[in-house]
Image (cartoon, rainbow, N blue to C red; front, side, top):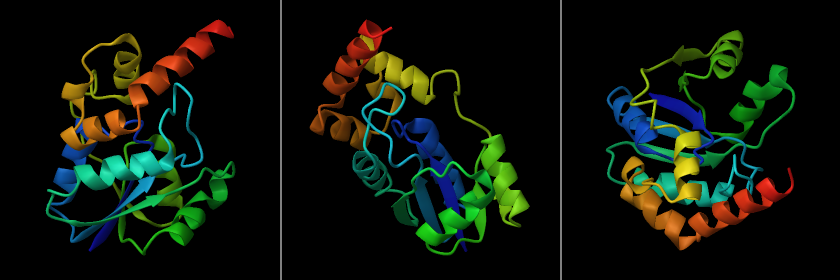
Length: 171
């Protein structure tokens, strides 16, 4: 059976990794959708789709499941979003999400949707990790080693700090 799991992964973190490890117990294959693929170079979405594909692909190499990492650009038309996702991905039997809108859209399209508990949501959350990247806090302990390497490879810490400085000066 093949499943689908979507997130913005800005950045991919240990909570995502734990969810994929859980999902891997139920499936043979997993399609990981890189959501908001067209967004990058902002404090909310600092990393490009390609950088996030690298993060996820490298982080998942040791999990025993066949994965396909696929960028998914946003559509500002929720009624056709599931069709858009299906057109961009291999066929999947079940979708995994905790996002209420995503759950609703898949359910309305007749897709089986499963939710999981979130792991340490107080710190394993993109906003918290991005804030730590900006302020120099400990972010490396919250993401897989492969993500640390990728962020350093693309000079992501410097990028998000410059973007945050620019955003603050334009307020």
